[in-house]
Image 1: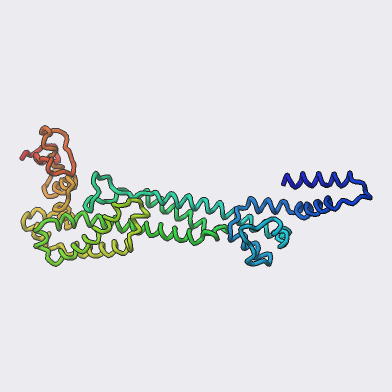
Image 2: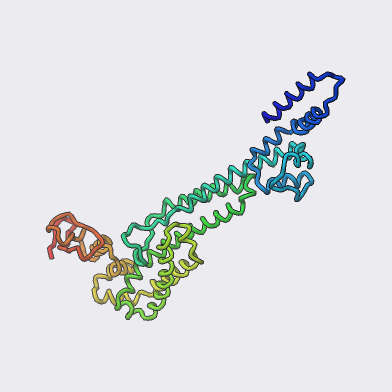
Length: 347
């Protein structure tokens, strides 16, 4: 822009200083060339700053009746020859669109890059295995997914989304599926914790011979999912497991049917210890499958009248110390029952 203006000033000054009766063809040619371009400097500036991509150039040439004639080595002289530069309004509209699309695309890339790094919200465990691969709290992740979906929905309604609409729609669909997967995974692991503990002992397998093969099928599918997730715990990568949501749904359906059929097994437990008749089915099932001491002791207090809590702590702890509620039964010792009135019955 500066060069053209400077060159034009110099050429016009030379023209003014030249004697009127003398012809200067070279100067006339130069001025003609300058005047071909000078009126269109603003359009050239817009094209330069417009973040123009191939689709925008093609659209500009199409709108100027030169379809298919754009190429990457296009020159200003070509633009002048094709009479593209005089189309000020068309250039303004297309460069504004290209600028808007560029900004929107940069925002979308930022969102996409963020989700590429998000990790599965796995519970903290020292060793990741089929048995210990559990989700931790997912509330913040689900909220983040909803916020991202709202942002993408807003993007889809903007006039500059055309160039990335397909990518925006694809990411929206992926995030919606992630939300469904996480909810199905949470439901699955609640049942998995109970049933994997139940079917790990021979007694349950003997009492429930028809359910054992069903659980084995669930276990096989889950093992493949767990191994896939452990290899790469990034959320998008883990959830790329083929048909993950459908498999989790099917596993949940099978596990629910197994849980419904556990009446016979629970009756055997109640016959062996009649006080278990005070408890509901889910409590008895938790009692015989849990690896959490807090869950165990909270349920046990319900089968004794006026008992407030169980007096238990680690084996190496002194009797009477504050109760330790952990998940490692082998390190715990039960000393007795503590009543609602504070009195204790020692074992």
